[in-house]
Length: 93
Image (cartoon, rainbow, N blue to C red; front, top):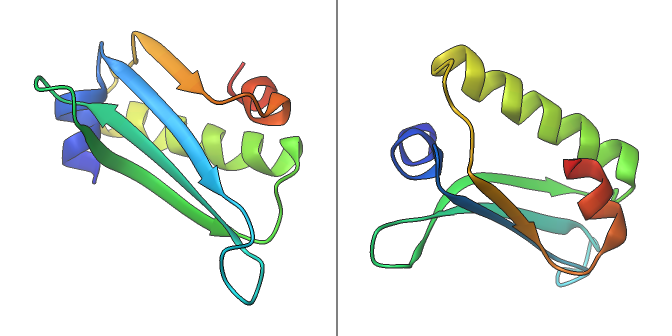
């Protein structure tokens, strides 16, 4: 997935969405996608967790950002999109 992040996520649109409570353990699956040249999403990062707090989302988003910048120091999306979940939007800021 790191190769997808470098190839499609740098200077491009990155999207995040989550599923809530779709399994018997009630874990959430967060998927971060980068758009490729044909407008389809390529997965670049996924997190499965039991917490959906802003603090937890911020923690793993920061870890992902640091990992990507260590692998490719110039890595920076042009735009980051999330749905209307305010805690997700706040975590990205």
